[in-house]
Length: 190
Image 1: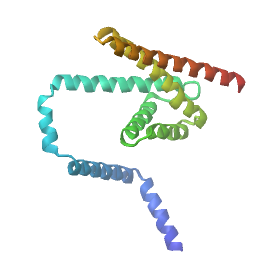
Image 2 (image 1 turned 90 degrees about the vertical axis):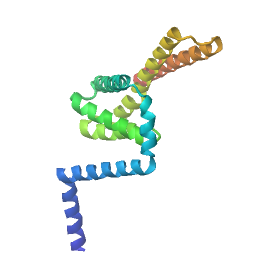
Image 3 (image 1 turned 135 degrees about the vertical axis):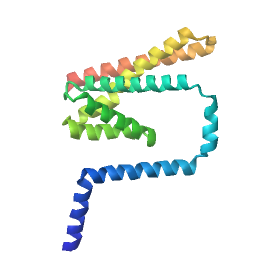
Image 4 (image 1 turned 45 degrees about the vertical axis):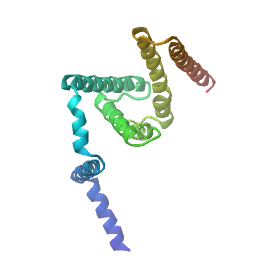
């Protein structure tokens, strides 16, 4: 029994070291690359890249990265009533959440952001849940409606489809307004 406890303590000590975490991360990365090479026909995938215009691809990657940095900054600003985190910490949590969202279904990355953010930043979990699931959803809904209206204004969309898109934009804005009113009412009641 003493040996088992000592062994578990040794394992905990090993994995608490920074080197062990880095090695575990490297092993996980190697496993993911091996899984990719096994499951994807790499020559066929690389052949599909012949038509890609490198300049546009790099511009797209840059704009996408910039949008994620802006989104992380937005999250930092919305967190200010509860905590005053550094941008680097907020960005790490946001990027980790996006990574998990990309790998796992059902917005698991948002749950990770709530859990790790609450623990690292000292923000109570109910506030983190409201920030991640309510406030960000409202802001994303407004951005979606704005982009949809811009696309309708700039594109040539047939009449019936235009009506469907406008209805979708109006429904998004209405849902955001209703959710904001309900949150204000809940704040006044509570």
